[in-house]
Length: 179
Image (tube, rainbow, N blue to C red; front, side, top):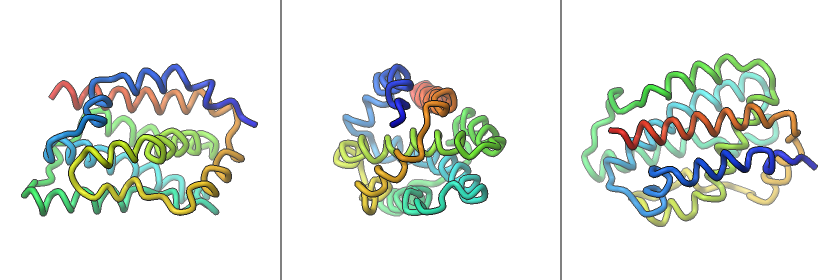
């Protein structure tokens, strides 16, 4: 069994302690939460696109979140008359997209899926309750089966890339706080 969780625990803890993560757990105004979702959507769409192209999603297609994030954004846009605008994207999003699109190893891509999607699976239920909208991005099918399947694919060698994913997440949180 992989010790990936232990090998990424320090960055996991740092990410959870950021001001933006605390805001997510307390609840945000619709505009602020929409901006978070929009930045997440662009990152997830890129990650899931490369994961699909490289065959990483074979057997775990239902882990994908980009479509659900888009629906959650659209719900907020309609309910709160929010305009989606590329100016809402943080600089780190472009850096992240370039990074994941340049990944060549399936294990590197899986490391990002693990960090992002497992974070939504676990912490997402609290975030959903405290933020506007339906929070469909936090709805996962066959959770126990999905966790078992993904965990069986994890290796300790993924730690560097998983930690890199946490670093991108923390950078995004910092940029969202600075605005």
